[in-house]
Image 1 (cartoon, rainbow, N blue to C red):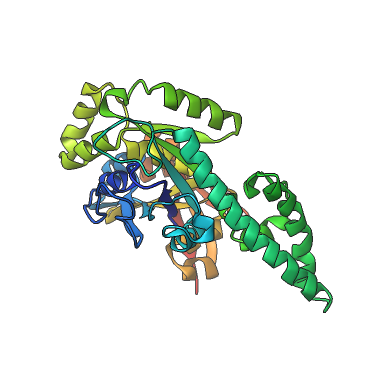
Image 2: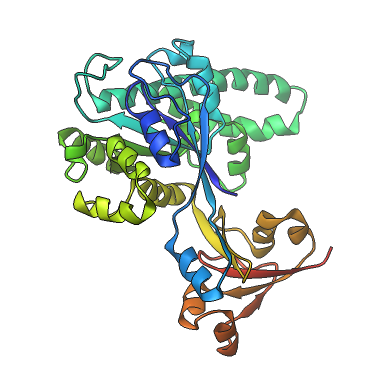
Length: 365
């Protein structure tokens, strides 16, 4: 699996410019008026991972295939979206389908780019977006609550299981708190996911600043960083304008350009790193002379499920996973050296996959 992030925000905050830069495409129309993005644009990019290049060099792999990250550029939201204002219903439907939300906040002044709320105030913009998502969840869950109470009268077992979860979440929403703050047991988590609540999705805040403030930030970004840190959330500082310039350069020139600006990472690298933490993901590898390939999966899963990321037959007929840790593969200069040093292990069905594991799966269907 990869992961799927919806880029959301008010109109004209730089969502489509950021999407174009991150995906190195011009498929999203970036224009100076609200709702220039109506249908969501989807772009997949290879996830930057320097480990993959090192592994490929040692294995003399002919091809390098990174794992992918999917970005969805969603139409701008306006106040009243939960009641259908602007493109509200479409917006909320598209947000419901993504794994995580990248909320872009405009933290720059520019008289040539209009703001739908007339003034630049990213804290206000954040409140507008989160209020609309919360109001939508509240409406959906109150209707669901009524329906579940009716089904309980018929002894519906699923309704009985859902009711205590709904009754944990509803008071939170009524108090203006997102659903992701609810405390659940392990048994309740799968049912909670089925509710598909917008405010249950993890959020990464992208603070879009001018080129001159890409390193230092400004008064707005400091306030937002302080606020989201109190909530246990994450924010990254990005200039969509700089990301556009980087995207137009050859890869060999990108690092030099970044360093000339006092930056160490591209916006994509920052978003991927934080996105992996947000969704609790890890990367494992399959390495050979034909190809070196990275794969993404959730943390806390076992070897057969990793095999299933490659092909369902691998999981169904799983026998064992020949496993080398990334650091051992590098230290021993490849598979043969790791095998000689006794660092190639055979792991069974109960093996918990670790970030950086290199696998060769044995299976029989």
